[in-house]
Amino acid sequence: MIHRFLFILFSTSVMIITGNGSLYAQFPQFSIFDSFERPVNPGEGTVIIHQSESLRQLVGTRIDSENIDVINGKTYLITQGYRIQVYSGNNPRTSRGEAVEKQAKIKELYPDVEAYITYRAPFWILHVGDYRSYEEALYMHRNLRAVFPQNKNEIKIIEDDIRLLLN
Image 1 (cartoon, rainbow, N blue to C red):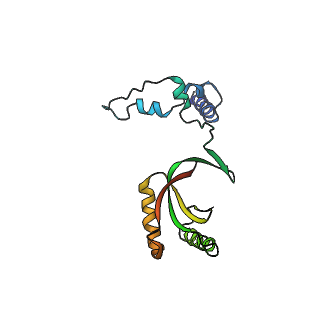
Image 2 (tube, helix red, strand yellow):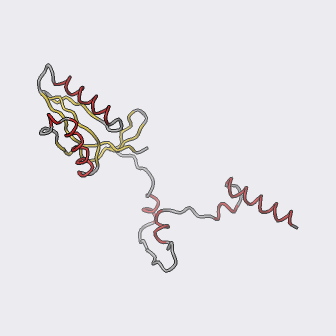
Image 3 (cartoon, rainbow, N blue to C red):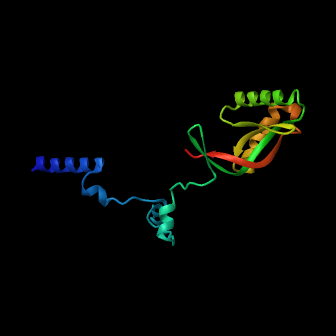
């Protein structure tokens, strides 16, 4: 009797873990909406969300659009945000070198922060970061003003298209 019970328990566990068998199909897949609608603690209220089933199915799926960019195997969302302009120079002999020099110093101090050099005739421009909010950019703005005190008056936060890593 005990051996039979242990055998049934073992085989049921294997079916659930591997996904084979009918027991696996009985467990529904929960979405974020289900977690909102289910009370966690006794005595809590419930949230009821009224929406179409098609909208429910869209949540959590990635939709291809023109605002998606793939660079070096990484997928980015291009959206409006903020960057910090650290340098802008129009001297044909020195501006590019200064922008590259400042970019190298920023990469040394902040290896996880992107720094972009662009040329818009006649200016070489260095932008830093991809920030969704002004407050995020303001924090880095203050740090960069401390790193480059001689240029603190030209370092400014600008609105720009930013890249957010998706995967």
